[in-house]
Each structure stands twice: as C-alpha cells, then as structure tokens.
Image (cartoon, rainbow, N blue to C red; front, side, top):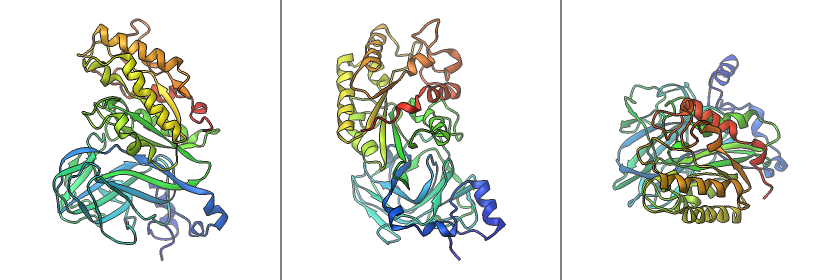
Length: 408
C-alpha cells in the first residue's frame, strides 16, 4: 500500500530508510491536511542551478541527476528548462528517488513524475515547465535523484555546466530503473533540470545566491557540498529566529554583472534564475570580479549602476537584497592596479550604500591582514581568486542570519 511519497517496506524498514537516507518519507497521516492548513502553505525553492548553453542536445538519452536539497517540505516539484534551446525537447519519462550510493537508488523509492497529468512533456524553445506535485515529503539536506529520459531533442541543449557533483548518463530509457547497472557514464553537469521546490509553511522562505564561479563552487571539493551556499544552507536549517530555510545556488562560472559571456549577464538572467523561483524572500548579490578583471574598461560607476538595477528590480518584486563585497585577487594572472582600484571603489559602495538592505563583508573575512589585496593563504583555493573549502565555510559564517529578512 502506498502511504507516502516513496514506497518502502512497512515497519522497521520504513524507519531504517528514513533514518539512513534522511529523505523522501512521509507518515500516512500527513496527507490529511485541513483546508486552513493548506491555505497557509506555499512552494519554496529547495535547490536551483542556473540554466546555460550546454553543447548539443541528444535524443534517446537518459540522465540521472544528483542534487542536494536545502529546506525540507511536502509535495516536491521539479522544473525542466529549454531556455537556450532552438528546438523543442520531449521528455519521455521522469522519475525522482532517494540515492543509496553512486547511481543506485534506495529500493522502492523511485517515483514517476507527471506534467499536467501526463507521463511525457514537450518543452518549447525558450520555455520551461514545472511538474505536478508529488505526494509525500522531501527531507532537508538530502540527496534527491531526478532521472530524465530525453526522447526527442536536437540543436542547443540547456543545462548547468559546472555542477561540482557527479551525475550519470546512459543511452536509451533507463529513468525508471533503481539499480546502477545502466548508468556507466559519469557526467559533471546537470542537463535540463534547473530547480526543485517543496511545499512549506507560509513563514518559510528562501534565499537565492546570484553569483559567479566562487558561488558555483570552483576549487571546493567535488561531491561534498562545500560551496559557500551549501555551508550557509546548513547554518540556516538549525538556526532559530529566521524563516529563511531554502537556498538556491544561481552561480555561473565566469559570469558578469553587465555583459553576456559565460552565461547571460546577471542583469539578463535575474528574472529567470532568481525572481521566478518560488518562495524567494532574499537576493544575495555577490558578483563583479569578472567584470573587473576582464580588462574591458568597465568602470566602478558602470558596475555600481548594474548593481542598482538588480537591487531596484528585486525590490520591485518585494525581495530583500543583501550585497557582498568583492574578494581580493592579487597574484591571479589578470590582477593589476587599475582593476584593484575599481574593486576598492565598488566595495566602498557596497559597504556604505543605502540601496542595499544588508551587507556581508566577504573581503574583510578572507583578505590577508598583511596584504589586503590578497586572499589569506589558508583561505586560498590555490589560484589566488577562488576560496578553498575552509574559505567557503568562513564566507558562510560571515553572513549575519538576522539580516537576511528585511520585511519587504
């Protein structure tokens, strides 16, 4: 008998799966919510990854995508994107389950996902689609596995290139399978999937981190969830006094505030990647180093004007905006005095601007006290631009959780 979101054996087996996997289990009584209770609940993003161009779309191919939740909740939904496609993509099947290890799922956990009641869905170029809600509950800080079968596709693929997480691929339709036998190909990107949300209480909200490769996690240890938004998410789950529990990482390696290149600019993707996510209360803005070090002649005034556009659009959507100072980058190959002068002027704006609702001083937290133009070596991931795991944790610890909500 199905009593929750994922079918497991009754009794001690249910307790064992829930206790071990910490995900995808729901008591039988939890589905009997009152009408009043339902009306006080809403969808909140629990995971996100910025859509970008990702090579050639391939038909008759399956993807087993591993993602880490932030906030827990009921009735999960996934969002599939064809934002950069020039042709329709047809998904022949989609499933979600709990990961046991590698590409192997917890037996009995893989559940079919539907779209408008149908088992297949076609997503037009430039569009996205959100699934029907699954019954049951998804736990916080757990590995969710979304398996997709792409039946028809061609042209430009949409996905997220630098996942810092191993996922899997296979030829043919294997989305329903729970074993790992068909999933011999390891991949380091997320294809088509760009968000997962859950239903939670009205007092629960989410933060979206809008950033570049530092937010995306480059130089953190792969498959360990040690990006700074991951550390922040873990702090938020155990924190009292804040309703911010969801965290979506919308960083793209090489991304800029003002210009397209490695992904669309922060200005161009703000609506799709940030403001469209359900339950978002706070935009955490941490970008600018790629604009500064690219030697394109971008001035502090131009970058500040870009920040102000993001702040104004976010405020108009009812979101709080927290700004973070740009990290030092001396000894990185593109460092020069002119770029450092722009960084200092930009950071002065971030620290003292009345436009922002709050500020996190990442620069102060990670710079060397002996040479403030450099990262402190213990926080340097090795290239003098991207923080190490330890640096990522210090960044998350520098965030004042009490300032993430501003009452907008």
